[in-house]
Image (tube, rainbow, N blue to C red; front, side, top):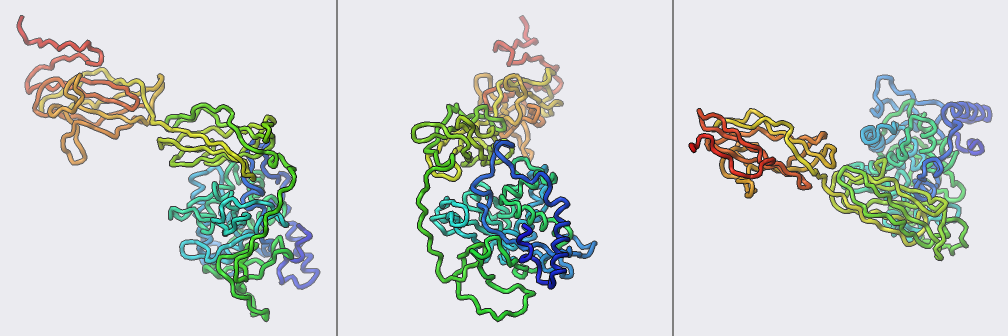
Length: 586
């Protein structure tokens, strides 16, 4: 990276001596906490899970290489981060909407993934390196970029080769993928990593709120703890696998940690140098706010939405896609794969909240059926489900082993019931994949019993002293979150609701004799609301039934005013014979 420092230093370094001092100072700042010993990317051997797509989130697309100033920003110590303060170094100012998106994404991750310890300054550092904070904050009030920000097409001509994966939906290119938006996601990665950060129901890589939240979740996968240097380095390298990129992002993150301030949207500084400079160097569409007038000719009219290398293209026409590159002879394991086959995965069924007992597996094979090792397989969950793989993700990428087999991480059912699909596909190659159907069923109980043996009695017109409490179990263990209904029935043989006798009260205080929507608690317990009695004396039956068919019938005795209690056997243990009247004479 030192080889590039000379051209990246700020114009204020007017002399060789000053420039040399700047390089020395920056090198010293990098020596502490910037390039530690463990800065290697996560590998399949370490986690059995590899970053998705070719070259991580961006496809190793070009990025801005400008370094932060040697002098750190120094806002007022009492001013909270993100509030307007007197302007210092232009590079410390972050457009208001862009900064808000970074901070909201970090706040969401503190709740959803507290063990990740995501600093918003990391998102800001990546956003600056990838797009110059959305081209200096060129976003609308909702955070969507005013013009699309696109990297160069990844056609293998100086860049990675990634044939089109989205039909041009995100990047407008149906031949090859291009990195899209302020955080520069390639479409194949956005397809599974995309998030809705502004709550509009859409996942748009061109929206800074969506893109910042997606970047945060991308950096927090694999159970990485970003407060640990090794995990932080692995996460950044998974975004763009370059040691120069790692050092650059760490420098900007440290710079923002020392202080920053907001600037109005659209007035932020835009970096000047790129990692692909000299090959795809594109002029800035507008001068920086602090830059003096220039005598350079104005750019030609351009069509909004076109782009190249993270900058707007001064061309009136969309770029003409280059013809596809002829396939080269197989040179990697992925090139050898002809199709995927299943490995005998059984029926995928689990109750809501439980783990699936079956593991999904596929084998990568050549055309003649020979297994292929070291091939990345992407498993994706689709459908109306909240099921996830272990770790809370809906996409997992796993490398095939020596036998060509890749096992997806264990599946965990959510609370939504119904069927969903799990798709296995080869990363970086369009071949026949494998689809599995998984089903989440409602939680059930196979036994239900009262927690007390005390008879339930009261006087006509009064209320029962005890509330009915029951415990549900499934295969001997407490059955939690199981749905149940309770009804005061007419008889053991007639389960319709009685029109007289004990009753519950609804929210308006009116009598009801059927309760629905009941659910057991974490210990499998179900405590019913208080019961009341009308003026009808006698023995009545309360029947409680759970999902799965567990049932118990509880006798309720209502005594006439001044009458002694009449013991009544529990019909759940009775033979069903009528109860003799003790007052009857022989």
